[in-house]
Amino acid sequence: MKIAINTGGGDAPGLNAVIRSATKAALRRGWEVVGLRNGYASLYTDNPGEPLTHEAVKGITMQGGTILGAANRGNPFEIPVLQPDGSYIYVDKSDQVVSKLAEMGVDAVVAIGGDGSMHLAHRLSEKGLKIVGVPKTIDNDLVGCDTTLGFDTACSIATEAIDRISTTAESHQRAMIVEVMGRYAGWIALHSGLASSADVILIPEIPFTLDSVIKKLDDLKKHGKEHALIVVAEGAKLKDGAHFVKGKQVGQAELLGGAAAWLEKEIMARTGQETRSVILGHQQRGGRPSIYDRLISLRFGAEAIRAIEEGDFNKLVVMKENELRRIPIADVAGKFKTVPLDSDTIMTARDIGICLGD
Ligand code: F6P
Image (cartoon, rainbow, N blue to C red; front, side, top):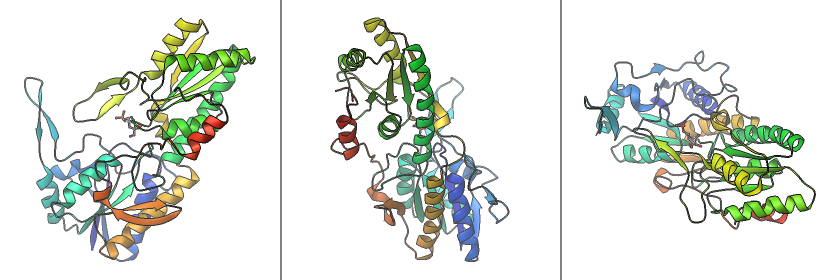
């Protein structure tokens, strides 16, 4: 048996722990393991990947990033190719991916990724590739599972940063706005905002009004609180508006961002209060995984190998109600999970007086 491991999409803390446990579990069974370099992209080159050995995965459980490299432009169905006039055409190389893996003698692929990667995995499985998926994204927006690897670490990093921003906000009696990642879902903003006692949390699931935010700041002042902490998801949107978008790069999803800067300007103009905005950005994705992420990542990797051993293909290994389960990748592909408005986390935020912008 020979397997390939692929880390697709953006990186997340915990990827290396999956690579290590999947590799070791496979080697123990006498299988061969190859790591694909920078996603599927290596499969169109002369250097499609490297063998993963016990030595290669030594000591990487606690390392951030991915030793295999990642690629956001890694969709083999639509590879952007630059033309002499500066435009791009898109080329479908998915058949090449499948045939190259067959030529390499790869029997199955462990695909570690988020919604985009699972969509690709599903399309590749329709072309005959045998895949087992592992759920990775700091955004926690994959359906069918309680949590994805990387989310816990991202929330911890965001919470730690917001705690620090809070003390300087208090010293200067400022409104501080912290923009966190999460794409079209508010998981990181909600969890880190709650954990750091934010006054306002704005998430994409609850379109906000500026009036509601300003009213909360006024109420705080009436109760003697001169500073305020606002956590805004990069995907937050106004009640009558769209998402704040920074732009779009070739072959990639739209880049969200700008909500914090917009709020900074509007709050200063409306209230005169000194206001500053901070974008946490990619530090939420970098560095060492939390203990929780290390553990689920190790468990996911080994479970993926057990699934392959049992011939249980085209499944995604998930954590559901604190147990490992396997669900069809087809059920996950092309969907994404947002914060349910009736969740107890939302109710808790409201019960303790946090303004959600509505
Ligand atoms: O999906 C993970 C994520 O970090 C999102 O939260 C964010 O919108 C996006 O990736 C950023 O992508 P990039 O690394 O291409 O800037």
